[in-house]
Length: 129
Image (tube, rainbow, N blue to C red; front, top):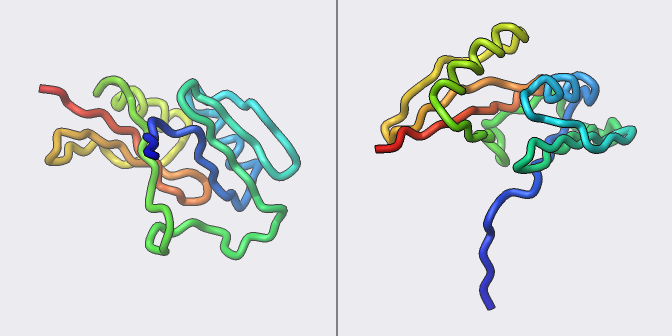
């Protein structure tokens, strides 16, 4: 028997301050709040669900560090280089710290930013030949 994974249904992050993280993700274009409970919220952007939980205040650490075992970062796809440029304008307006657009050797352009728990997020667009 074989199977094929063909997409991402949801991603879930642990948030130190659930309300602060909820406000951050609610600002991102296209992210719509679709579920909310006392220790969990979920957004949908038309492609995947993003859940946030505070594990009822039982967290061991209060800040993410990609240098520990586990996740390093998540990269979201955008449709054009202009979307990356527009994102910089949006981030500046919303006072969200971000890097610069970088072109990698594989023709991938990335724009990094971080959420309130220090999780690195990226927007990515690949230049097609």
